[in-house]
View (cartoon, helix red, strand yellow):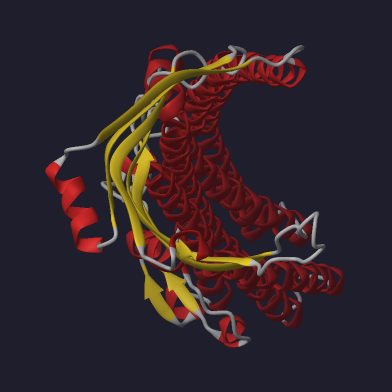
Length: 503
């Protein structure tokens, strides 16, 4: 076989293999640590800053629930007071002399334990002792002791479990919102990792296609030079081949830069490295498996989205929270009517022990009860708060309806993207096959002397572009599948990921 025929055979076989190179990433050429898609996702779950930041929000919301529950914790109070008092006496009207001043001093000790009950009643267990002496009793200790219980039960405003537990229920709803928000953050991050992974894989395919296109162009240049030397080709054809080969260097440079940018995007998602070393670190992804061909039904899957979508669940919880707030503010429109009462036992003696014993023996009881009424004349503040709370509730209901409508559209669009990209994969594959067949024909025509170098070089570029388009369509199809799962809210279930928010 002659040398020109062998070179044309090499050119023909190289063109046939160009398509397969364009579909997979050149791992060996890139170098660096090799990671798969699942590994990238696990690294993101462990190190992604967005997930860490949103994890703090759930922990904060859980702590706020604990804070709200603390309103029922009993509070112990203790105090001791010592007091002295000199009181001047009036001057004698007859003599004009002022008698000696009176003097008194006292020691007061008080200890009580109080709190609030879930239906709104406040209570206090109290024990106190007062020792008074002075000139009025010859400085003899007089111990007045008391032990008993007192309480206040609202009858209108702040009555019942609703107003009392409102702050706790709101905190619990906010915790639920933060947990769904954390789930949304994890889903979004995982989806971004999948997108970045397929974008990087496409960038590798694009770079490989650009490099192979340059190699084919240089093979054509070498062949034309040899044919020119033996007089089978003009110098013009050699120049055309060299010119077309030179233009492909720019494509390689752009493809290399795209690979670098895609690497940066993926590394930012899967690592917590914040040093300049992040830029120098190289990674190489494993070629992902071909995505499956699926048929989706947006109308049926819409109901799944309502159950799984974090934004919809957050909107539902926000409506529930605003409903609690509105009911609380409606309760505040009522006048304050409180039933108050106390019951206990007294002790009184010059000896502290005896005074306390009288309390323990329950010989001298004391009680009181009454009603306290407080009615604002206008309720302006309360009416304003209630109106604002009702508007907030209506706004949340409208937001929920808006989110639901948005889910209908987003799920429909995501389903449409899957269908479109499936067709793109088929059409671009067919276009590549046709471009390859045309290139094969041009190579044969060139060998027969009925085609030109320009036409072969141009067809090489068409084949390269067709291969890149097919790789792009395949990447977009894989991303469309991931986006559809995200729109349905099933990303974590599809990947068997169980993420518990921090508490």
